[in-house]
Image (cartoon, rainbow, N blue to C red; front, side, top):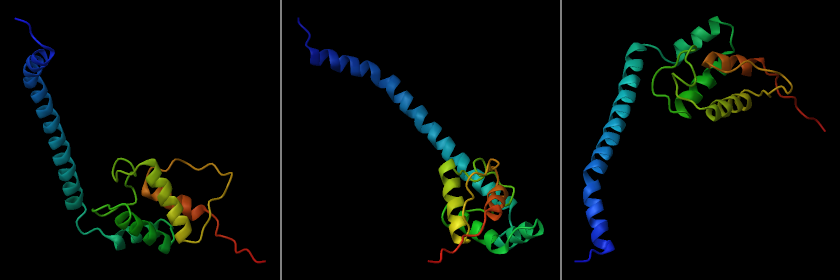
Length: 150
């Protein structure tokens, strides 16, 4: 009796169904664990920061010598544009605590510069932007935009 390619393919697929199914189950389980972990982390952050809001963020930043409007703009940007759902602290790390990628941080800097009438000074070496406070410091250190009069 001669076996055809189709029969061999069916046999091979039947032999591989269990390992493939187990692999899919492990992957699905891993995704569920990661999702639940993220939700729990956000919940813990929100509960630990109960009572904190924009006013407490701004008050803390003002005591460190930062501009009121810049602090408010930074907080609003993170809450609205970056969809940070828990209260933000000045010492929050942009990547680890807030989950921002490098491009998100660059977008934030450009938004804050534009919204506060500042421009990025060319030729300056800036320190790495690790925390929210670092971003606000860099933008505050940037010069005000010059008006071009013709």
